[in-house]
Image 1 (cartoon, rainbow, N blue to C red):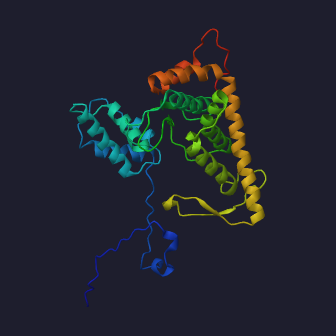
Image 2 (image 1 turned 90 degrees about the vertical axis):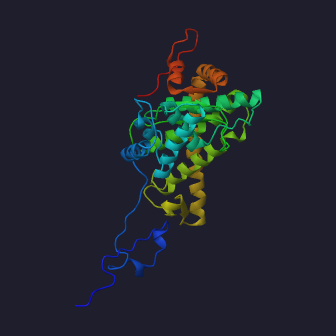
Image 3 (image 1 turned 120 degrees about the vertical axis):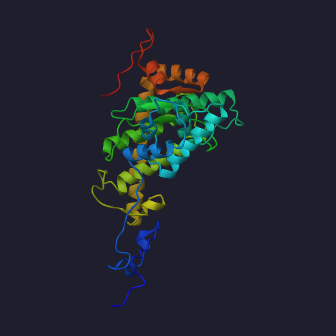
Length: 322
């Protein structure tokens, strides 16, 4: 009986473009099993952090669950980098063990980059950024079911961000309703709305917010069937999810123009929601922005304490929707 030289050999291959593979490669007996490697979920992220944390000395009571909840969409490499950055930070501060603060700061480093100490904002720019980030935070706090604000900072980062507002979901969600998508657009519009309301001016600081709001609104129309005008019709060809996703429109030129109008209407609706919310909470917008300007970084708890406390002479603010 002849002996096969190939017995016990398994051939593995990896690609980010599975849709381009020749079907001849995918027939039974060839590459006949596909194993998608997705980004880890909440439990997976915590497990990965636990694995990498075993190589690092940490203080007792470290809660890696908080870090896992703060990093939706992070890959295994990102999570390993967070642990490594936390260890480096502890060494820089002359400590032999990593603290919870080291881990939280390392999340910011991986997401937005290191603090850029060479960037010194003028007093006016610092004020604008303070109102911009406070605008995001207040609109987020007033939206039903929105993720709680966990941090607001106006410290420039090496990624180019002059500040950011971080929201952390209490639980992981896999579905988004139409209203939740519209609320996210309103939150993204909150920074620009604050600039318009307080300074009667626009800056380039909202460029990334505009990009994200437009992408989400376009996905609602062309991908998620959340448009009253077009309904449940796919109007685009999904691009590879392994290469950043996105869509290419597969419709007539006239329909494409109508899609643009729908997208513009969704973003403008979010913009008006943000403006209305900030007008109703103008007093708190001033108070929190001034506090942020002095401290540069505040926690979600500090933010909510100021937002919800009764200041006596302040106009009564509508309670956040439940």
